[in-house]
Length: 305
Ligand SMILES: Nc1ncnc2c1ncn2[C@@H]1O[C@H](COP(=O)(O)OP(=O)(O)OP(=O)(O)O)[C@@H](O)[C@H]1O
Ligand SMILES: [Mg+2]
Image: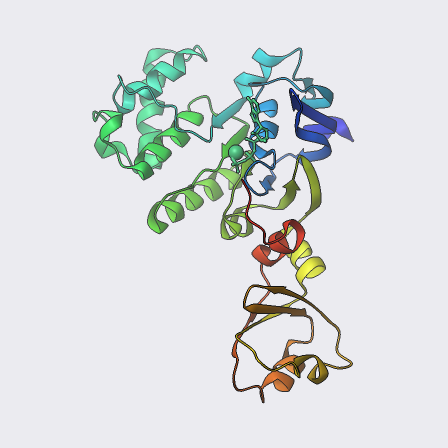
């Protein structure tokens, strides 16, 4: 099976001194798939993606990209992948289009082709009007779009996106999501990391939830939601009524308390809704379960770093 996977990892680890940034994880990313890594700050997401794009070597385990060992075939792997790293590492001394052209030299793309492809990519990411602008004058959203355009200059078969939309406004995020979905329809395989559960639900076929260097759960967003959060969630705030539990007698649900809120997770939303109706002092929010519920249930509600 492993020769079909675009990315194949077995017992993959990376340590920095005494820090186990990635601690024995296994996963596969299949052709045409969008695979997401979720996890709190410091979970190890960036370390995993940096190993996939050969920017840092594994300490132990197997990691193959297009069937090639990352330890031995770095150059070959790099010709097939595009990378948008977590930090925008654009060259501030160059303007927008020059940032793309310079990058194209790493791939030995002829100048004329690079010019054409650069213009096309700037149009694709709606920054072509700023073609001659210094990159330092671009907004955060435009810089991010330029980083993504740059990642596409070599027509990659695998696109690596480390937090593609962090800090962007909703308009910029939606544009990027549109474009990433277009690329996916064209068959580009993607690996992304994100802190936005909505982004993962909208883009990813499968996600891995990481914490402390390990994968806690893996599956499609839908599967994970059903498995870890059920279908319905009730958020009950400021309730003085300890009678909640008595009212829910005999129903199948699980719950969690965090601060002033009780979360009830269940597949029997209608029945629970009816039984909670008489509670008047509380503020009750009834909504569908989502990936954020899964994330918080698996990784807890405590602050990180
Ligand atoms: N070059 C390095 N040297 C030492 N420690 C590192 C290095 N890179 C990462 N780490 C540590 O490895 C752990 C995982 O870091 P990583 O950047 O992979 O997390 P992350 O999941 O991407 O976090 P974030 O969501 O904040 O981007 C952290 O404890 C981090 O401090
Ligand atoms: Mg990171």
